[in-house]
Image (cartoon, rainbow, N blue to C red):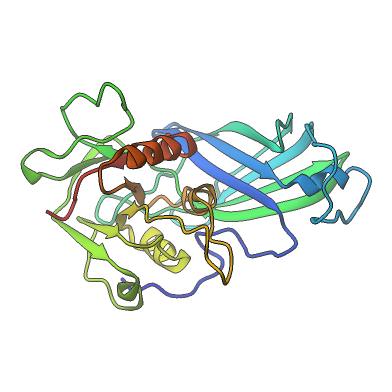
Amino acid sequence: MKPHGDNHAGKPQENTDSHLAVRPLVRYVDESQAVLDAHISLGPWWDNARDNTHPDPHDDHQPLDGPVQVKIRMAAHTGPSSENTFEHTVALDLDDHTGVVRFEVTDPARWWPAGMGDQTLYDLEVTVSIEDRAVDHYHATVGLTSVRPASSEQPHPDQPHLAQPWPDGHTVLLVNGREREIQSVVPVDPVDEQHLLPVGGDSLLLVRGHFGSDQLYQAADRAGILLIQSVPPINANRKKSPAPTLQQQVDRLAGHPCLAGWLIQPQSPKANHLATQLHQLDPTRSIFQTNLTD
């Protein structure tokens, strides 16, 4: 598998005029239905949107606490379910420029790792309107899947969202309720993203020391490769340009079906606080605090 540039699949389209952020989370999926939450965030500049066809993103006024109209459209564009299209429109009340839309997709085409099934992807489009006027638009490619560790151990009593270590190094994941035994864990450093990655559907990529690029996640989605994303320190003091916040990184990556979980190292009170933040942003995925490459 070699990452390559494809600005259409697997990421929101770059649009400097758009200030709409959407974090799609698959809360539940089986062969008959999928339940998703679309976490929607609007910039403070939306306060002008009701009275201005082209609102100024640099102009802050009173908070816009809704409602706005949100239209969600999903269409499978790969696999045998390419005719499967879903549309949902709802009036959304905003709280501090944010809100959540929960919706269901019937008869979903699920995404599977290579060797277990098809890597079906959906085009997700979200349009936000005020008084029937479309004022912002979001597009991404998402997949419908569920991945969690297959472990008989009880969760940590104080932090139930933390995944327990695999016993005896036996790495097994449950993908859509079916077991997938992991034969190898392959670390991916920034330099490795530019080379051919010798992995198959029974390998697990560990993206460490950096947040993986859009191209890496796009390639893994298409190839059916699972990966764990380590969470490096967020440097808020960069001089060249502001570093993306943790929420922005989770927003960017959460829709990728290849993302099997998050990794935080080392174990420390600060790391536990970060794990709590991660769980609040993405309660659908496991958080690991152990060295997966040992």
